[in-house]
Image 1 (cartoon, rainbow, N blue to C red):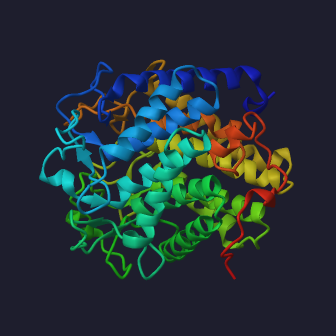
Image 2: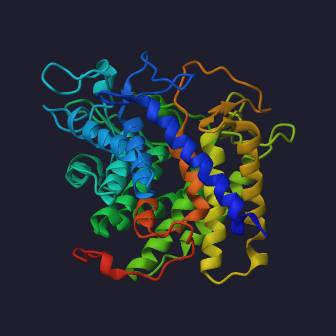
Length: 446
């Protein structure tokens, strides 16, 4: 019996997923969710981050949908924080970082001047969390999601049907940088929003982002550049213009390819659910990105397991970017599962998916052997030989990526995870029968 058919393996996945969600409870503060220090406590030296709080809205809403006691309180706290404390009451939009205490006027207070920046990277996680909370029917979530999506149309979607990265506080200046991180996470958020709102427009927008990404990847030997100009020309140095606190990567990031390997197939499955014609490039995109990332990143330093983070033009890991990050291993797990699932849904046999099952087992073994120090606590990054690395700053354990990796083989490619849980599809990963009745077909694409 393979791992994908093993009750005990599912129990192992469920136990670690539940432990991750329980660990995240320690991050709660009055205005949202904090980073965690190395002891799992809220870190008072770091700001309360919009992306972190959006991710916590997401994972605790999944907990609600799975019936995990206590999750409702935390999901509702996240929705309340996203509704009351992060919005800028003067200029609109969301601040990216605030203080843990509520201001005297009842609003959030920016952590510092940098916290006043408006960032689509952070918005994407707020949308993802609001969409999951809406599916879980949490108070105020539908209204929050509607407001966030209106802001997308007002400020963030550009003339190419792609996404701007940042604005200043008043939405008057937009730095000349675009990024793959924003594209990939916005596509994920739009898929979740499509199901939560029953508006296929958001799935269509996600597919347009995927189409651009495919064209870029195909021209670059199936590697994805991280930074672009406002006209979407590749510009590696543009990342230095970011001011929203994100890490600036060098080279091609293997994790982005693994993320898109999964999301391309989820868009493909979503198109099937609407009855739309499925673009042929999506399967090619997924397969090629996965194999390139696996070849470029997996076991690249002395055969040590783990994915190197950044790959240079010489097709080798970049010194300083060759570390093994938890989020990339998790995305490898999700991508391997997605490809196996898509092939089976297309009628493939066991022999056709054996390669992806082997990859899955290798990636999960790596997480177990190197990253999980105790249930709920995962090491966020290791060196290229899996040596301990002391980060410049303490950080949260990345619950969002870990929970998705533990759920990946237990849910179908479509609908998105929250909606799959709400429809009773946990542990029923095969593609469900298309249900067009769930869609609002006003404004269908041509």
